[in-house]
Length: 413
Image (cartoon, rainbow, N blue to C red; front, side, top):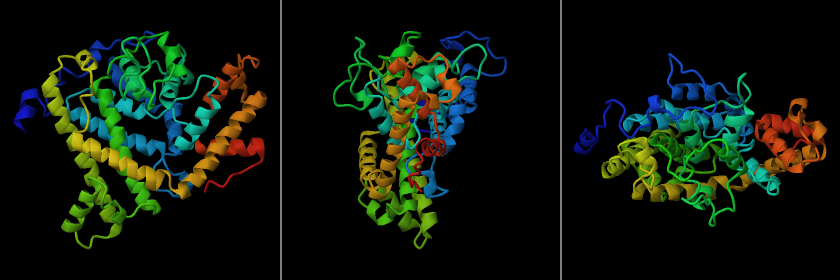
């Protein structure tokens, strides 16, 4: 253990002072008796795992459509990988591992079918009705759309879980409540927050102006690590990327050369897996070292000190940040925008657009439970109901509904 690690207490000791304390949770919107056997964050994790939205992730696209092969990742396999990395980071920083795991397991619940293609189509469809944002949709699912409990809609997660889900990438508004551009991936700040976040903010203050807990920061950066490493893996499997093309990509090229030097003649599948394993290890270790340095600089005495730190404390070093950007640029060009992928993604966008248009024109095609208490003359409310219904679909169900309603069966295989 390094001197720095000893000074701040890394290495398996009890929970650090900057960790979220489950005994001091800010509670749930709907009061419930405490559990004699589980902490609040263990209950959050379990509720997410048992939710309908979580099960559906098994049949939602990550990057490639499931029809392209049995070994490509779905939203569920990606989510499990993110949870493993998030928990490892939380353990290293002596955080609440259960909260970090819950946030990782729940972070993609709001994604539409067909990955980012479905999201793009839904953003266009909802442009005149309050918009669509997958993080906001996650909040809507866990606070409203899941219907498993007799006493409330949603999962009634803890304040800390909701806070982490809605702003794991950083503050959403400034001190005056104005939306921040960076939080929404825009060059200019949007005029207002996504609909679901505005709606819920009227019920419970999630401190949208502050940074999230370190547990949420672990889940967020674990998502980046999983994306980088595993999308390279899927790109290699799909033949969109080869090892030679990775030679000039920062970090990745170095790792490829290391494996080639250490294991000459290693068969290609085993070679690829060794490369992916080392990329993950290198990135995780970088986060830990860089995070230790930031924690030593700030020495937060509580999780609220973390929220008021003014920046993320769990983050890559400057060198690894540059490598992360380069990897994402490479993947965008060679994988996400490969014509073989884009052909199917354009067809998938068409499926989502057609479903939305059909349900808006013929609301009676919605299931009876989705038409309940719905004023068909209230177009914004109808659009939100249609959006909720489509966003919850798996790829397979969306294709089946498209075929039933339009008679068309686009080739997404």
